[in-house]
Picture: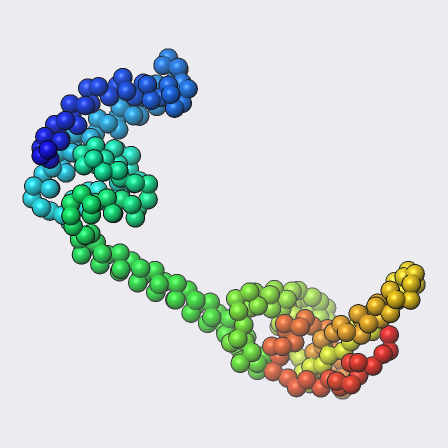
Length: 274
């Protein structure tokens, strides 16, 4: 069957489409012919199918000229455009499929040609552009992270190892507002303005609660409570407060980013003082 004859067959079918659409709508949508929803959907279907002759005539002409580039351009959206999918399937006898991959394969099956090089190049260029955009976005985020920690207080090597999630966690902690000597500022700004000395760790025995301890009935529960405090860790930033040593409690994430010497006495961590 020639492509010209196929196009005439499709055009002739349009005269019979009205009845078939009514049957389809009744079967699929359980709609009564007189309802407003039926009329709306019926009009939409007829408008779609009335555009098919023009589409088919353009397709036939392009096929005659072997203009596969423009032919593919005409049909590349056959899975997204209902009219195009309807025409493609009736015109070629090949299902258009439901995905872009199936649509491209249908084109190859019908016209015996791979996707024109110009479209392959466009797809590859789009993929490269997207990869470049993603990389630039990653580089921008990394640079923003390095700029955020651009201060001698922070360990550059530790900062560069941060994952995006770890950076977000550290930034959230450091951007917390507190009052320092009556001035409200972020923890980060306050830490960077200190006469810092070192960093240190301690167990959580200082958090021992007599009330919590006495609420436990068995000796085993009380022992577990003491062991938990002994195993836990508190982290501190030590600084010089007008000649006396002071310390701010900090998170573990912030502790690991500090470019300061850890002066913790490891033996003291395991001493049972709880």
